[in-house]
Image 1: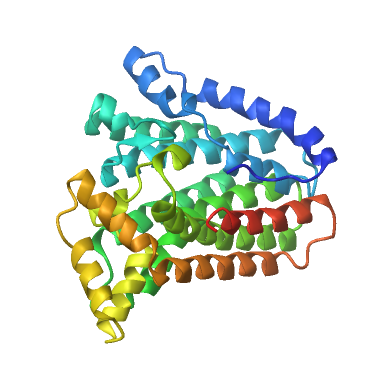
Image 2: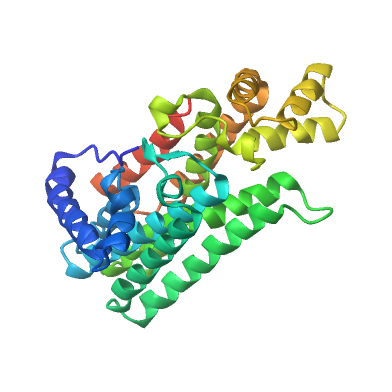
Length: 331
């Protein structure tokens, strides 16, 4: 989804700057090696809403949004995001991304993983020009991205609440980079520490809301709408909030016979397209999906609360509207 600006003045200020970011992004992924050039451009050419760089450009408007460092910061966060997509699609065995074949479907897993590594390297090269503090922030974000993926892969420890574990995974895997996108924009726009802290907190909370909404969309939408195959996480056994809430019902003895039967289907063989479609259809009508939608709204509300102290104006309004739009798409 695009970041709704809701203001002609913001559109006028940010649209040409986003075009510059797009140009620099393509320059950043260009490689002298023919194969590396093709694989690195694969997801850039597939498009995308450029949510993270736009968030950087937007929060910079709370200060001096015209500073040149803001553009480099926006490039860094999108390069980092693209790199994670190459890795995530391999780990999730996702066949498509943004309506195009995933890179590992075209070139194989090893090439896709190495391409993600190349993009991380390019992001590091760009962020080095922003100074040691930016390098530290980028490194901490990268660490959280890796920890989030690691903890999602191995699952919760014995005795750990799977739902709380999953929320932390979302904060690390998704929230951390959205937070850094907001942080970089405000920081390199010259904002004060209080403003930087507020938008950083907003970004992390909005990131969790974003992913919870995606969990809903994964079972309520179709591939043509999202560009991804519905139920991919179900097939690969990757936990999502609706399934975790269903498991909690069963574990706490609150489940009906239909709940237990649905969980048996989800835990069964979903390698066939028909079996997967049946599981998605059954889960789609279950109350746990609506509960996940309500959780997404709650996290979006917390994100909005985080920027209560920002000055009233177009930027704050755009951030508030974006938080609402994140969860409205999962309705």
